[in-house]
Length: 340
Image (tube, rainbow, N blue to C red; front, side, top):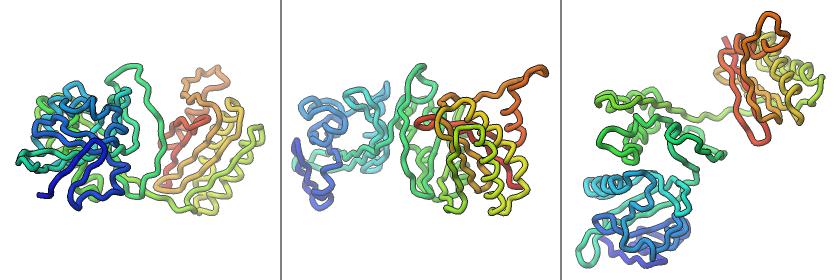
């Protein structure tokens, strides 16, 4: 076991930690019960608590969940059983922000023979908040990030992670949420993930959605800027017809032009700035129209005497699904058409 030296502003652990790692990595040393023995300046930068504030206090103070002490106890038990632990639990900054941190806990033994836990943590840079539906009126921070092709994303309800007798913080580290073999097909991963849940006594709804990112070739995407005037719809139809012909998808021309006409006409009617049109060829044909109006469209039930209100009903009928999403400066309304 390598010797461990840890001070308020630096950590050295034999050859396992290099000086270049210390600028971005926070370190803490805990006793066997999870009480802070030492705390680096990087740890203070990560969670806002100084070494003076944390020394002699439970590390669970930086955990956001209501049962933080039980969660820390569960981490300690896992560390004892596995001689260490790693994962990405949430930590709470002193100012109240909740941050996901890449955490690694390693068992070390001091000169006095006592067991210590060396904790290294890095901010993974993804904003988090309380689970959806848990707190009414809470706001969520938006962000954009680039993911490598093949990245696996898991979206789940709390029933997948929280059961009677187990805290949600511990449950988020289960293989059901963080699979040990992420390269398997999503269907196989989902089947494996649901097996332990189905074997438990029902205490909450459990839902899991696995998504793997794929990259599109440049030739599969075409986009144009349109003038925000009465010529936009005609221009959009002509551009789409030409692109569908280039892709050999002439059979979709009539329905695609009808969808585009409605979406672009709405953008001209309600927006004030530039309009964008994008076509994406993948398992389906995706049609996207962007504009500067942040309000999302809603399908209406038009009466027989109404002159308006039928456009989105037509879009829904001609596409297999449609929707909208907010973007900086406006929104994107999209529709998907089946290739067959």
